[in-house]
Image 1 (cartoon, rainbow, N blue to C red):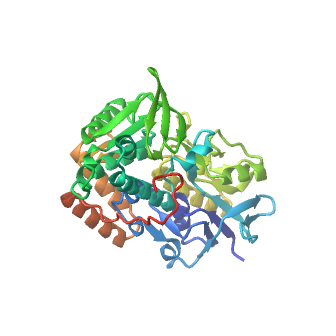
Image 2: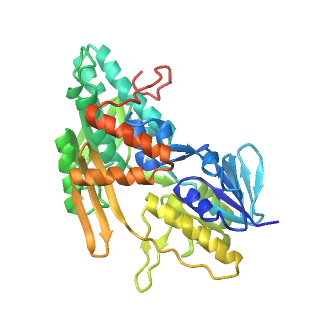
Image 3: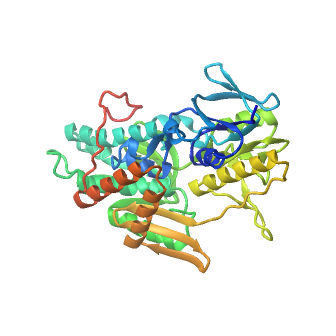
Length: 436
């Protein structure tokens, strides 16, 4: 029998690993708890009604229909036997493996306050995006029916917690919806009077970027109508709003639509793997891996993507942490596949080396910031040219020609009309203490 390779998770890392093994003399099982691969960088577009779900998601079975050595299964791992080379699934079934690649990704972190999740959903899955879209649109609907000015103002105050790329993108798009998409559609309220607040505990937004680009991003957010609150630490969230602490004291922000974009934690699978192997995990629950992405003492197990606390090993330089971005996950997926094949051939594995191609984030219409690494040095720009670069880069990396065409068409239509065609929600969907 050929070696059995089990890949848990079909995000960027898992997908890339499976594809890199397409010509290998192995049998691959790709296991995921959803039936689709998700292009997460554009998930906020689904949450803000700019794109429909099929535009950024593709069925996993369809992606591997032409790769004969791949079997796709739907299931969730609840246990790992590292020495017995099996995993247990939620339905009680088991799967055997000779080589294991764990690419289970990440989830939300509320820094020990998981009770906040009911009032401030995060954005990691399609279900999260649908819930956020629902809360935003139904907040305007509730405001249209509300007679009390104070409560109406609370319904029309939208708060995004976290000034990273996701938070910046959501806040900017919320402002665009209020100021360009919805005006003229309501009779008792003016959507342009909605307040969009971005709450960040640090001293600047987009802290992974150089300070000058962070400041440009803040300026562009302000120009779009977003109020940026820096140095504001969230101390409480409930159904009526949130409390923040600043250098000037505490402040209450009434809101019925709060989105959490402030923290990331590794998949719970990291803890399961630690229990099974004795490996170390960091404070975010990520598995501390060896230079070649394997688990210490278990060379047949590799961990990649957001679940791995990996480092980049460049000869002559100190190891550097790998950022939790999609290019890092893709590169780890390819490296895991290459090391697996080297191990099968009896060759030594190679340490992982991350190639940083830069960062980019969009703020809104005609607004973005780009920080690229080039052989001649860093290339940094913002505004309309950066927005065009961001747009074409994301279209290029989308999975499948159809998705690229549909997204480009949707964006072109939205650019000229300000319309958002995916504004469909089910009022019957139960809210988690959100507007009803």
